[in-house]
Image 1 (cartoon, rainbow, N blue to C red):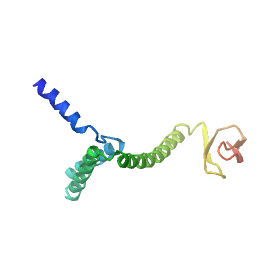
Image 2: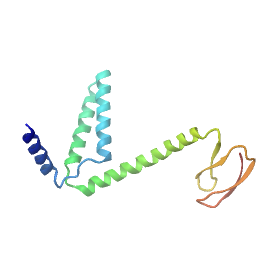
Image 3: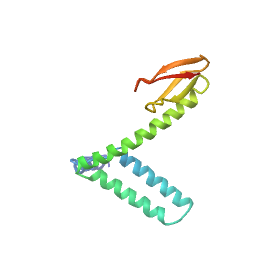
Image 4: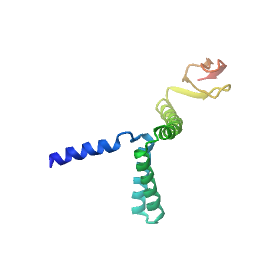
Length: 138
């Protein structure tokens, strides 16, 4: 049995040689498909089964694709979209965590989020991005 599994692993690695493989976007597609399947179990509609199957087929197709540049471009677009969302979530978390000690505000010149410590009176803040000077009461 051990020999069979070794040979199977070797054959699978031979099959995947030159193919794109799994990336962050493919993993996201699989997770969304699994969530859709779970929701379909709770609330049967038929549409979610079809959608999850389509997502799984697309994820498998991406994994086995030999067009690495095309798949990498798709993954870059996905990563860019996720990066912006993660940055917003991280900022919200940071604001919540430091809500007792820090005041956050946006620069009027460029929109950069700036912070000053609470309870220090009126402070002169210079935006590091656009060099706009702002007086802010903490």
